[in-house]
Image (cartoon, rainbow, N blue to C red):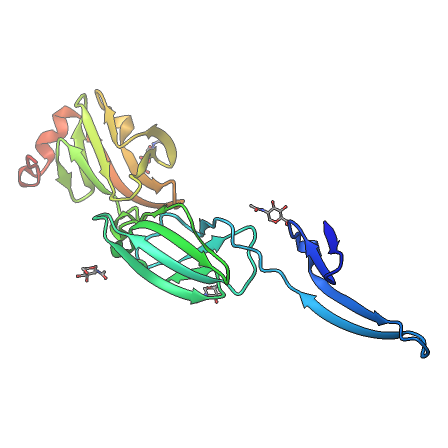
Length: 256
Ligand SMILES: *[C@@H]1O[C@H](CO)[C@@H](O)[C@H](O)[C@H]1NC(C)=O
Ligand SMILES: *[C@@H]1O[C@H](CO)[C@@H](O)[C@H](O)[C@H]1NC(C)=O
Ligand SMILES: *[C@@H]1O[C@H](CO)[C@@H](O)[C@H](O)[C@H]1NC(C)=O
Ligand SMILES: *[C@@H]1O[C@H](CO)[C@@H](O)[C@H](O)[C@H]1NC(C)=O
């Protein structure tokens, strides 16, 4: 929207669009009586500074685990650089602190995250003509002890508890319960095997009225399905006829 203001050699541009940037030339033309035209050219440059728009925060991870790193980016649609970025943190206790002031780089790197980094974050973008503040974004830090681990080597508890040199023993027609436990986060998933065939899924495998044909190797497999890790423990269980129980060494039969 260009207007030449007559009688004043002035030019008016309304509602400056970005496209108005560039070189303008004013030509001064004299027409003296005898020497033809005399032209003077006066070039000048118009550069525009676009105000910054309201920034927004993008986090590489909004719930990083303690000890890891996170990068926050203060994004904005428009704004002529160089832009200064100020990062503010509001803690859980509503305490406001300026975390960083970074010239012409919209990233904030937080290395070795700890629980003190938990809180609301805002960025403020500032250029030559204005400044704008983002909405706040929550950064949560995850306690290291919640890290996914395990499973540990399983522990198997046999009830009733009876051991011989050959491993665990049971009497025919008893109800025998095998309980498997292995620490893990997330909690272990358990699978039981008898002589390498899967027989049960779950921590506690109970055999009602056990028979001699149930003698063999019982293995518990504990799995952390998140990490896809597993550990396994095998016991040997021998089932005796009731009439042979007196052959067992009575000192090795204990109550648990
Ligand atoms: C950013 O600039 C472009 C081009 O000038 C414009 O179309 C757009 O509306 C601007 N965005 C904002 C949020 O002002
Ligand atoms: C933040 O990290 C990125 C990538 O790791 C790196 O390119 C950038 O320079 C870092 N910025 C600052 C301000 O340290
Ligand atoms: C967190 O901040 C408190 C109080 O300023 C400080 O005592 C503590 O050492 C900080 N913790 C870490 C892990 O930096
Ligand atoms: C399981 O293994 C034990 C020991 O090797 C064996 O005595 C038993 O017969 C096996 N049971 C089956 C059903 O294969």
